[in-house]
Each structure stands twice: as structure tokens, then as C-alpha cells.
Length: 112
Image 1 (cartoon, rainbow, N blue to C red):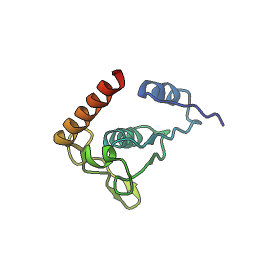
Image 2: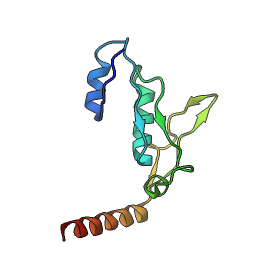
Image 3: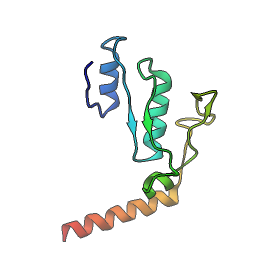
Image 4: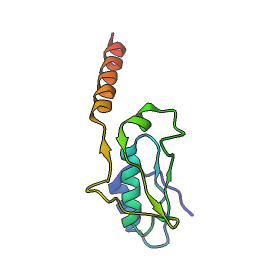
């Protein structure tokens, strides 16, 4: 079995097109956005039988805990499609602004 480090969705598509014998396992850790993207991708890609993620609750990362609202829904042991449009998440715009400002401060300090 081959293992590739695939970090972009166009690469996942290329791997997916190689044939049914390949298994793709996305790893989504940083934000609720990446978890939502990976979960939606898993639901529509036949070679993704499961994906790895960490629920927000046990995470130490404020980015993972605060940036989005609404997490995955499982029923009968299966991931359910989002009930809401798009990825099925709410972006917390206040949290986003706090993270953007923190990134700007960090970047400014790194330059000086």
C-alpha cells in the first residue's frame, strides 16, 4: 500500500482518479472549517471511508474551539450531511476578527 501526503483537494481528486483500490484518509485538526470540508469531502468521495479529526471539546486550541459553531452529526454510526447550506457551519465573525488581529500583531512583532 502506498502512502501519499496529500494536502490539497485537487491532489485528493488526482489520487481518487487512480482507481478504486486506493483509500484516502483526510486528517483535519486545525479548525472547524477544515473538519467540515473533510467531512463533506468524505461523504461524496467513494475512496474516503473515514477521516481523522478531533472534536472541539478536548482541543486546547482556541482556533479549533471558537472559530466555528456547529459540529458533525452522527446517526446510526454514520456521518450525516449538514442540514444547513454549504459546509453546515457558522463562522463566528467575532472570533475571526480576534484571530486576524492576533495574527497581525504577531506578524508585526516578527518584523521588528
